[in-house]
Amino acid sequence: MSSPTLTAAPPLARRGREKLIDGKLVIGIVAVALLLVASLFTGVYDIFGAEDGAEMFAITRIPRTIALVLAGAAMAMSGLIMQLMTQNRFVEPSTTGTTEWAGLGLILVMIFVPGAALLTRMTVAIIFSFVGTMVFFLFLRKVTLRSSLIVPIIGIMLGAVVGSVSTFVALQFDALQNLGVWFAGSFTSVLRGSYEVLWIVLLVGVAVFIVADRLTVAGLGEDIATNVGVNYQRVLLLGTGLVAIATGVVTVVVGNLPFLGLIVPNVVSLIRGDDLRSNLPWVCLLGIAIVTVCDLIGRTIIMPSRCRSP
Image (cartoon, rainbow, N blue to C red; front, side, top):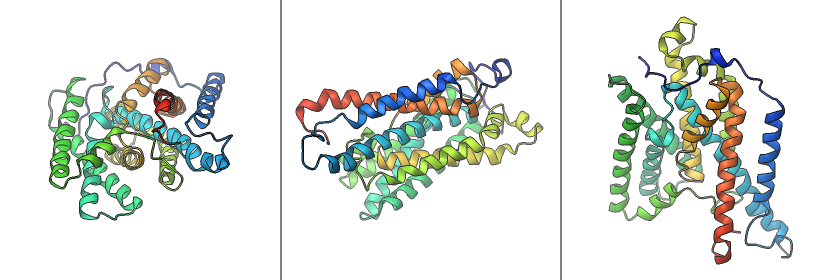
């Protein structure tokens, strides 16, 4: 399988391998930690004055903040993996149809198995995400023109087709509102007992770190990867599987977080180069920071209406 042309990527050989942990990363961790503390103490409910304040803090604030961390890191990391595998800076789960395939899986589960458990819905979403991503790669193999814009356009077109199928099915079974909620992307429904499956993406992050060097080499193209002894097809399947798991889990629990995986890896790569292993902590931190800031802004603006979750 030939690979698309690498676009606007600072070569690893020129930048060199960055240190994994340095003073700047520590400062970044502290800054993100402060944002997360702000998230814990932002909301309508008076956790200090109310009698059940401590209980509400454990039921709502802590799960929501953990979900911000895991979802933000997972989607940013997924974008980084997909950009390496496709050698294209405009690719991430929402521009390859991966998210739309996960949504199709969810709507089918809701229709045919209305009482399905969260684990069942998550499993189906992961399977559909994997299948959809592989369909994208199969289409990519047939494309002879590999400009930087053609690849995401193909993904967006596929996603639009799958999204149309999902909308049609939802209309036929009066489930359009559910579909809209899934694709809205919201942390308001994240409570204790409904977010725990997100911890799976932590395992995905560990797996990505372990195979980071192979993913980086695979990002140089099939010919180079094969010459240095890397099984390109196997690494491609592994990377696709990791992205499918992360996307499926986040879609089930939180919903769609579009373009996070597009912006974050590009910002980090412009500054630090293309070494996945040393960039991974920065990608995760920036993804967490962006999601947390957006959530804080949303909660602060809408807080006077008192229609938001505690």
